[in-house]
View 1 (cartoon, rainbow, N blue to C red):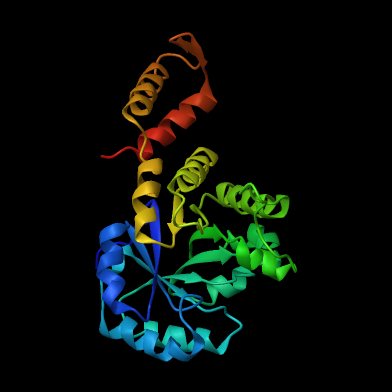
View 2: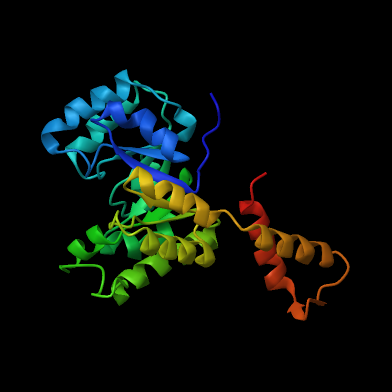
Length: 268
């Protein structure tokens, strides 16, 4: 079986809509077949059967399962055992133990509650962790809030804190961090700005809720020709000197590291 890879654009697809599986794979690099929020409780048995009966490329799929504390979780894993999918997204992850109990599956831990965000230093140490993602709306619900954003579209401070906390802990552990979804599917400009900010902050991917968003995210994570040219010159210059001038700009170790990150995102 082809090794699973994480693309820059991740697209949620309701698991009870197998007619959309291939369309989602055509739009995004990685698809999240969702057994949790995108499926009503009454349709989850149907969604599990669809997951089993309509297989798609497991190297590009994550299956979002219900929280570890629910009966749906056990049913989800039983269904997964009948498939070739080996990477799951654990909704409302709140401890490393919950992640490790899902072995042998690799797990993308979704830190989307107050407890999950504050437990992220522990969660990122789980032995079978494939990545972490933060979530804004469930976070606000978990603390009694009524909305993650201000009237101008900016995140409230508590959401920004959660985003930064999960990102920093992922960086310390050396695991991929995924930015959360952008809910306004009609606002491509706002999505691009948020995706650009995610790239600059160090996220390796961003989740989407509509196929049209995937192309915007993918383009944001792909460095421009000018960025690649600059990065190539920086890396080349660093072989001769730890600190040097490039087109009037002082280059040192942090900028060399940033240049290498740009080259890692460039198309091969």
